[in-house]
Image 1 (spheres, rainbow, N blue to C red):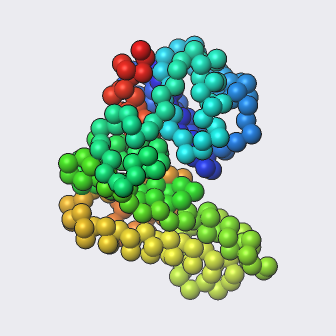
Image 2: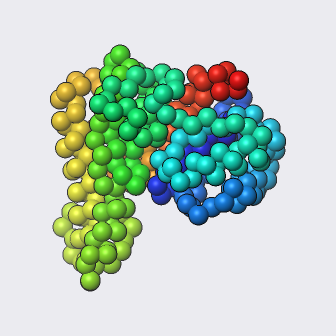
Length: 259
């Protein structure tokens, strides 16, 4: 079995792949204080609850944008899973070529999403990840990662309003019943929802003008399901896009990493 781990600033996502399918996945809160043994116990408990034998894990691949956790996760993998983890970087074989000014600055999650989108849909393509930040990642028809854009995520925007204003409540962001709110919560929902949709579509307007009208679009991330129905462009949502990208990259690198 392959264990894929995506470490984000807000959430940590795990997936287990066996044979030809994902058989389990979990979404946890990212905990930068977690110890090696803490991770080991947590992962073992998750496997037990899913009626899976953790000793069957033969490979581990990790994409991380939280460097503080890399060491503890690597040690956990070696001590509890008896597996040397493969960390995703711009230096390994991902199936795409990084063409940015500074390839080492590209986040591992963005590389993984781009590799998955290009493999699944071909190029040119854009993957939009609705996570802590909203990221736009562009791949050419030739499989070149060209770069993209980074915007504040909807959670960050909501939290900023809540913290910086004395009388505005914190809310769950969803599509409002009407654009003109008639109470504070409805006004906040309208502003955050349509503001985010407008920002996303405005950026896509400009990117598509460069890449062309035949560009494929795919979205992923925790807020994709809430925001994308309002978009004029995004029709495809892949919840496990990042996990699938990790699997694809593992298959390209497993023979090398196992040595």
